[in-house]
Image (tube, rainbow, N blue to C red; front, side):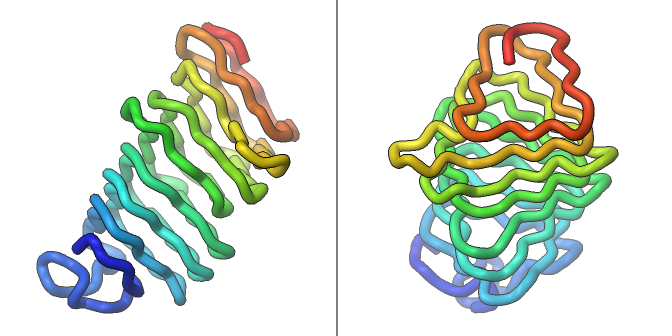
Length: 178
């Protein structure tokens, strides 16, 4: 609803009710804080912010078009989930992200200012189709990408990982530069 509030406050959601494990959560403005862990089937982050200490588990699908993820909690992408990071607006990731499924990054750069860690676990795919920078930072604390699964480069142009890239899995460069 464009304000700042806790995820568990039903009055901030339309329709009135807290999204659960089988629901779609759509955020287009404002700030949603997670004080506890939550699960949703689908996450649509068109703008606005997701923050707090709680974990957010995306079980099926998601799209991140703009906005920020921040806080001491983490965002988890389940093993069967596909999350697309797209659109021409930069995103800001200042929260840990654990990928057990598939990330398809086709959009603008992803900035970071508080050393987030992205873990791409065994069996997971991080498909970098974008021509953009990952962890571009306006401070001296860019993020870390730890790969145990597959990082694929399949787009044209260049992806620059401005932070640390620790590879313990597979890097599959099909086109472009990484």
